[in-house]
Structure formats: structure tokens, C-alpha cells
Length: 414
Ligand SMILES: Cc1cc2nc3c(=O)[nH]c(=O)nc-3n(C[C@H](O)[C@H](O)[C@H](O)COP(=O)(O)OP(=O)(O)OC[C@H]3O[C@@H](n4cnc5c(N)ncnc54)[C@H](O)[C@@H]3O)c2cc1C
Picture 1: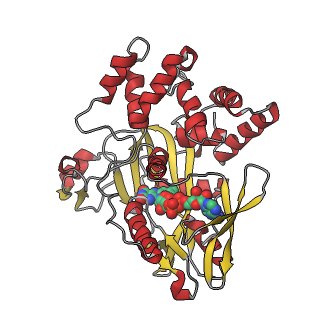
Picture 2: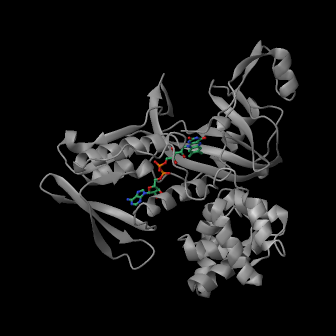
Picture 3: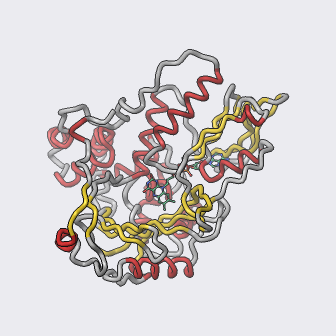
């Protein structure tokens, strides 16, 4: 479905001399050559995920966040929905009825399956990427770590990002904490793989971490390669489908497979999925120049750098944000002096993007804190805006600031 001008060039094997030219910093002793290939990178995975949610809403989905599915509602051998609770509110439970329930709970998929009576042994491991304060540009480098597994050192948001570290031991879905010892251990693995880096732990600004499906291979725990869609009719339970996803890159295709299984269970005729070719909400029309449009309509106050940032972060959604700032001049200024993120983006996130917490706004809706803690002053200024939008009292503001600090642990931030 991808336009041909967006196809990546083919990869190729390159000589040792070209390796040295492209990556003079690498220790290439013993190497006879290398490989050069191209890949896409997501500047803000959180905004892309949000675009998928917007697309679902545009096609009739009712979106909720901070709602937890607690247990299946069973009738005979059929799941007819789930009991759920609003984790932010009064913790009251309520029912969500459905003819088919899709369990897409990521590492918690096995917890949901267990609540339905299946104790599937889905192995999990902890995966870790480090965002650093090192400035970085140019090609990403890939080297084998001492165990022979590839580590990537890539420029991301102008900084060096290194990953992916994998825990040697299996873990549970809630084992998301990365301790000081784990951080030091991975930094030393990184330095053995890329000796020229000589990275210090105090140069790590953020630890991206998560729990992902794993398998045992050659006596070692490693990432699971194959995604799965499980129709539990085979287990004697109707009305429930589980997805075990292994990559963001292949998530759209897996979702297509899962929805096909769900539609099949509903017994309805359905058109073929179009998600591989229909642009997501926010994608500008082909040939349009969003930045030029923003500057044409708001050029009296909008700087070119900020217009580029708004267009890159929000796509066509930037039009509404610029309009909001046009109406209220207090929202035109950046939240942080070094970043082009506007006060209007914070307000927009609270009013129109279901942001409920400071962590939502700083790490998931804006780029204020996607590469590290934005600093106490910026966090405070953001919390003040949200306290007005979401009617937080002083105790809630303080709790939100603490939760933001905890989000970045073990990195303490500026
Ligand atoms: C450090 C790291 C680096 C990675 N790098 C890459 C990469 O370079 N390329 C790539 O393609 N992939 C990468 N991945 C993998 C990718 O992030 C995952 O495959 C992807 O996020 C899985 O998506 P998911 O929606 O299945 O699960 P998740 O993203 O885990 O989402 C599951 C959601 O379900 C919710 N949930 C759980 N239980 C319940 C419940 N009972 N009720 C309601 N909601 C519930 C959770 O809160 C969560 O929001 C990386 C992962 C990590 C951790």
C-alpha cells in the first residue's frame, strides 16, 4: 500500500574501506566488510498510536482510557463481554457487553487469558532502550554485543539512542522497573559493543522499557519472532480472541488478521481490510503544503520553526492547535524555551485528546518529555495549565509532579 516514492532503497554489502568511511569510530578489527541498509524510524511512536485511535473513532469506535478490564462475563461457554472499572474515578465496576471480545492487552494478554481460565505459558522478557544526552546524527550503527546479538546505536531526536537490551531472565507483565544495577549492566554491555562511546550512566536521559513476548532459543531467552492470533473456540470458549504482538512495525498487519478473525466469528459479510492503503487521520493530502498553510493563516505570530514542529507532530491536527492559539494569545508561547512545543498543545491535549495526567501530556501527547524529564520548571508550568483545564487541586498537582518524576526512574532528571 505504500506509495512508490516512499519505498526505501535496497540494502547492499559494502567493503571494509566503505565501512571505515561511513563509521570511522567503529572498531573494525577482524572485519572483512559490512552491510548498509535503510529503515524507517518513528520520531514519536505515541502520536502515531494516537492516530490509530483517532482512525478507529472516525469509524465508530467508542474510545475510553484509564478503564481496566477486570474479568470476563461468561454465559455457558461464551465470553459475552467484560466487567471493567474506571481506574481514575471511584473504582466502581460496570459491564461492557460484546458479541466478540478481542484481548489486545500486550504483555498482560496472558493475565486476561488466565482470568478466562487458560493458563497459557507466554514467556516474557524486559526490553530496554537508552536515550542519551549525546548529540547524534548520520547513519545508525549496528554491532554484535559480546553474546552475538545485534545492538543499534541510532540518532533519534538529535540524540544517541541505543538498544535493545534484553533481560536474561523471564519476567512478569508488571516487572517494568529498571533498577540502578540493571541500568549499569546495560551501559557496560553498550560500551563493550561500541567501545568508542564510553557512555556514562549520568548521560542516560531516559530508559524506554517494556515487557515483550519471548522464546527460549539455544538455551537463551530472546525476543519472540512470530505474532499470534488465538481464537479460543479451540480451547472450548467462544467469543474471545487474543492477539500476541511482537513488533510495532507489524502491528497493522496483525490487527488486520485479528479483525478478520473477529468478523468471521460475527458471521457477517465484510469488505477486505483497507488499513494498508487508507491514510491515517492527520496525514496531509498529497501535494498539500501544511507548513505554508499554517504560515499563511497565522504568520502574524507563528514562527516557521514552530509551524514545522506543529505540522510534523500533529499533521493536519496542527490547524486546530494553531486556531486555538490564534484565539488566545496566551497559548502562543512555547512551554519550554529550548523546544517549539506551544502552550496550545497542552490545552489541546487536555480538551480534545483525552489526556488525563501530566505523564500523558509530557510523554504521550507532546514531545516535551519523550527524550527525558523536561525539568521541574517546565513540568510545573505544564501542571499549572492542566490544573486549570482538568480542575486539579494543589494535592493533585503535587501527586502528578511526583508521578512524572517516578515515570523516568532510575533516571532522576535535571
Ligand atoms: C524498549 C523497546 C523497544 C522496542 N523497539 C521496537 C522496534 O524498534 N520496532 C518494533 O516494531 N517494535 C519494538 N518494540 C515492541 C513494541 O513496542 C511492541 O510490540 C508493541 O508495543 C506491542 O503493542 P501492543 O498494543 O500489543 O501492546 P502494548 O503496547 O503493551 O499495549 C497493551 C495495552 O493494553 C493495556 N491493558 C493491559 N491490560 C489491560 C486490561 N486488563 N484492561 C485494559 N487495558 C489493558 C495496557 O495498559 C496497554 O496500554 C519495542 C519494545 C520495547 C519495550
